Image (tube, one colour):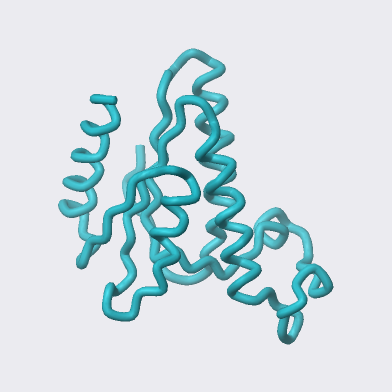
Amino acid sequence: RLESMPCGGGSPLAHALQMAMLTGINAQKSGDVGKVVVVCISDGRANVPLCVSMGEEFDPDADEDSKDGKPSRGYLKEEVLACAKQLGVLPGFNLLCIDTENKFISTGIAKDIANAAMGKYHQIAKADGSAIASVTSQALNEIKAQ
């Protein structure tokens, strides 16, 4: 069970989505679950490329907009959206994306992630435990009703 979750710092969002897919697929194969609901609590802004989170070095030649050997925001966004699309076509998988980004300066990336995965999107002003639990519970009830 999840007791606490640190926030801030590096966001290997593509890797997180891949790990959620792998965990869900394994649970389905073992017969533990039928449906998988991935709850992504994020502002949607990835800043760690998939290769780095997998222990490899980033190749700046892979991103024409790379600066100082680091991936561009566009590269990171496309990488996350590609993973979200993969999640969206997996049988029995649903994504709930809870957007914690300040809506007044929002980039809309979390909504793009939800759309790419054909999932549900909710923006919450204050990402405290009760708000997250309420949105998640509501979304789970909607998914169960499908």
